[in-house]
Amino acid sequence: MSPASRSDGAMFANILEKIAGDVALAFSYQAEDVVVLHLLKTFVTRPVEIFTLDTQKLFPETAAYHATVERFFNVRIHARVPDAGATRQLEADLGQWGMRHSLANRHRCCKIRKVDPLESALVGKNAWITGLRAAQSVTRSDLCLLEYDTTHRIIKVNPLADWSEQEVFDHAARHRLPLHPLYGEGFRSIGCAPCTRAVGPDEDIRAGRWWWENPEHKECGLHLRPSPLPRGDK
Image (cartoon, rainbow, N blue to C red; front, side, top):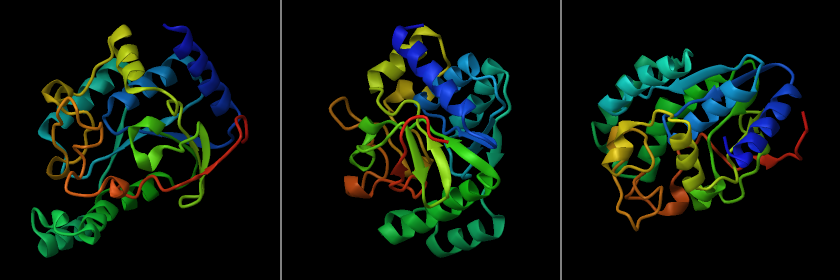
């Protein structure tokens, strides 16, 4: 293990030990989440719930990868699904591709399939761990290691906040961590099938997400401008 990952892992563990109450890791099938899960299993001794948001619009490869990750780390990843009635009404109103017709439609889809299930998953939790990195997009450039999410009223821990994409993949390769198979097909960010595509070598890492929208709009509502906290705050 590299000195950087040892340092980051120890810092990560120290932060979590100082947080009282229940903590959860949101696993979204990105390479970053696999690295965070590896740091969690290597350095952290306290219990942490692991959950994912099953939007019911994921790629077919994602289900098999979910099982692969559970086996590799010997963990249970709890799937949070959207409300069935809400999704039926959404599909009746928008059809298969209606989320592409306007920003409002896409936000509505993300709210039902992702934001509302996330809020349910975070009930009773004091902290939420993510795999976000500041370098991922213009909407995340001011990301901090430790933040307070005012929307969900919860501490947010971003252990890879200052990592580069190369550092993520180097760590995964060094420890032979399983990666989503779509990375091998040109994807650099993996989400719902209707809203994610492969990207070219010269494109931005998030170019394949909601590619018909402007870069400053490329968030689903899960991560909204939290307030930074000094390192070590509870």
